[in-house]
Image (tube, rainbow, N blue to C red; front, side, top):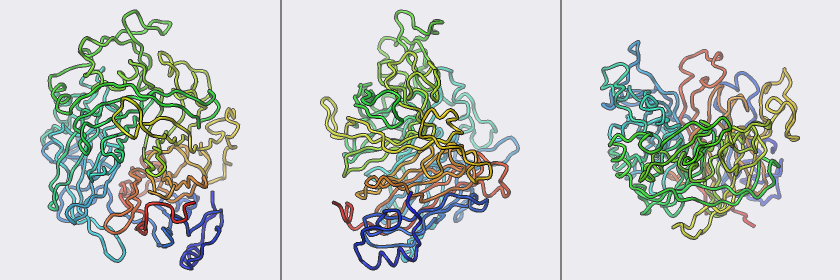
Length: 619
């Protein structure tokens, strides 16, 4: 961790134009991208604030930055009668709860920035059931780059049957908002698995909604929003052909047709989707990854592997939507029986172990391959032998210059271990599987780099070929009391402001959102941690120097979401951030003002817009 750089000194140093050899901590503010540290919150006051770096230097140009709030959940903007993030139904009327009040979702997640016909917009999604999406028109102050909301409105999601638990997302190369639906309902349990969507079908007057309307197979897909005019017209599409699972993020590669899809949960997969037509995600071919480990089993949380892919199927959105509309059920796709006491499957059944439900014995019914591939994607991937041993697979980003995709794993444990659970013997996460992944556990998580190239049989130049662990958190003995990992730190003292932290305060804890500073060899990492760090942080990671710089911290009980870099948005560059559910995940007793639990949508910046596409002093 580099030392904090004094702002006045750094600005004077940068403006001098001297090509210095370095600065405190070995970092060079003259290089293509430099940003100052933020200290770990140590006082009660600091632990209640949103704090961000106060200086950035991009291509020798310094700028005072900091955190700038754009909008908070519940806020009324312009002449709106519905607050930002308020849950609405299929008639765009506020959903009512039993006492007649109107719930506000403090779960703002991915929030995009879009330019349409010279106007500025943002699309925000709220991670709830039912979920919500809002379109906000923004203004930008020319001199300061400050963004201000002008008007906001909820999106009509009735044509896609509402949205379920929308989580991370990206702005596509063709400038649309590509969101997600996380933690899909388990259709094996029947229609009741989607019961929390009933209020979406309430018509604005029936408390509790209509429980007969939700169908679990309508939830668990990417959702795309295109703003089509300066007047704020829009189109919403749910991409059923991209597979159904706990979509954390779908990331579109530079060819506009290759998409990597992460899957959040326990015993999950990693998926590749290749669209039939560039810039159109309404039809394509879906694949699931196969991990072939090349590093020694249990050696490290940062292992290496060769990666292959198994084809699951091809479909169009319209085909899968029509299939769901027929009323297809899990029992129409698979026969299922309980495993034996010895945890084996009878003849005629294959084992699957996916999404934390443990070993299942399944038999695919004749002619149901497409239904299985696109409605029970994770189960089918496990059934055909793809790797479903990943744990809490989160954000994705791409370094086009380096040809490497980065994927965050919030925790390295369970199926990612070798018949273990946090270092202790445990069979349940690997039983019925090939036990492909055999890493050392690390509850603080890790970020992996996946190198891409051309692979025979897949119509893409961006196919993952190998994996390498890049950076991991460091556990304390709170998480690793027996020091199974020799690198674990002693627990923080009882009088430390970081007492009970399961992760080193000067390292990452449960990495989630990722974004890349294009051409600057810099990865931005957002955290989603409960016990790792009391206050979640966003980090800048210099891939050349292998140095972390803390650039943002959040209030008690919050999560960092929507971390996304815009190198050229309205003549400025911004790092977008969202502070989700303050005081909501932990430290709920510290909330003194109910208004402080509302989520924040804001930016770090504006930063100077890069002058070129690579490091200023690239060697």
